[in-house]
Picture (tube, rainbow, N blue to C red):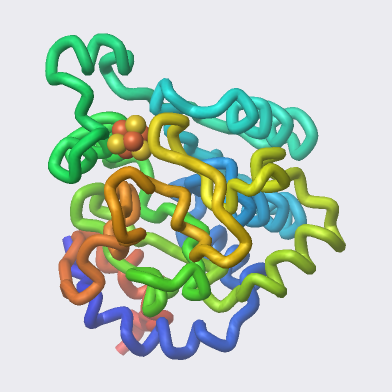
Length: 263
Ligand code: SF4
């Protein structure tokens, strides 16, 4: 096995800054073959990735974490994407229902410490079910989301799942995203039209006012708009330089090295 660190990805990340999202998706498919999936929470950016995957004829499943307390509109959006785009969507779920969890641990999401525990149980832990199945996961983080995402790299390593995270939309600003959705009639979560700029669990999501930051509606009850669920490792610790392990051949392909065994 060979090691791949975040530092190893600096050069390839630099060259990838010039590539379009569609080019990055095609690279991802050809590099990781059937060992890649995309993550979506059924918001604008994730749905745009779903549309682009279809457009570039990429063949990979979409992973969707159903925390058990999502809005019905979010589940309907998932079902429309599966039906109308012909996508294979794998729904992952936590071990306990919210009622069972609250009976055992209390209503966690009401405090900052409890929110971390609740998001770990209901968002991050369900994703552990696919550990070992994929070498790469595509997400839809954008730098224009601001906060911890302002410096999100295109490629990062995820030690928890031992995979590479790929964010093809990092350079897509709000106007570009809106234009793509409009031009391609991308299926979107109807809650976006009701003032929900960012959408998560029904317990922790509210609409935002026009002059508020886009993530102001997430965990509003916990304060200053800097909370993340933790399902995207770069949201929590963008400065780390962690390491994952792959075959040497896969590391060479990710880093664009041509391997020549002829002497
Ligand atoms: S968003 Fe709220 S309800 Fe959903 S998992 Fe996180 S803390 Fe729990």
